[in-house]
Length: 131
Image 1 (cartoon, rainbow, N blue to C red):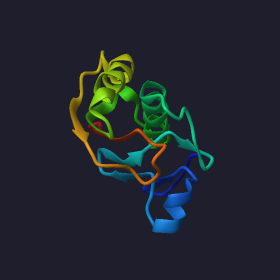
Image 2: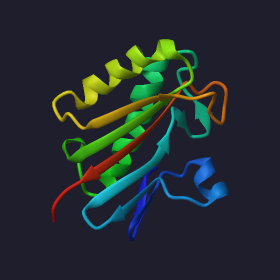
Image 3: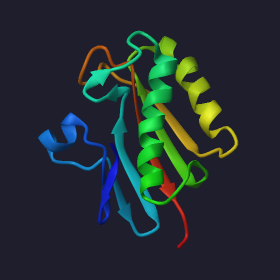
Image 4: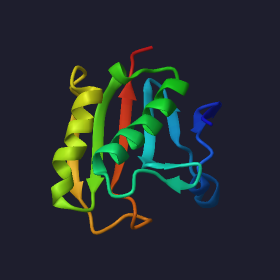
């Protein structure tokens, strides 16, 4: 459940409380979203499927952006991190479905691993709207 407290948005994810961070921060016209994975209610969803994990991770990020008062059309930057080179196309396909009309900047990075080995992708999203 995503909720907003002042300039902070929280999803209730286990690591937010444990490690002391917010899902997103509203800073003036910016909404900056922390890294999101396919973990929902403490469970990693779609194990082994980078496309579905990417859709879920982007969904978590977009929920936070919407709770902060912006939309996917305000997204200006996306970063995604994959653990396997073979996953770029599947994550890119998910990105294109969600942001193909918006065309934010985008960076894809291969990493050695994520916090849970079942996680195949993590995304960061930033949105901006003149107020």
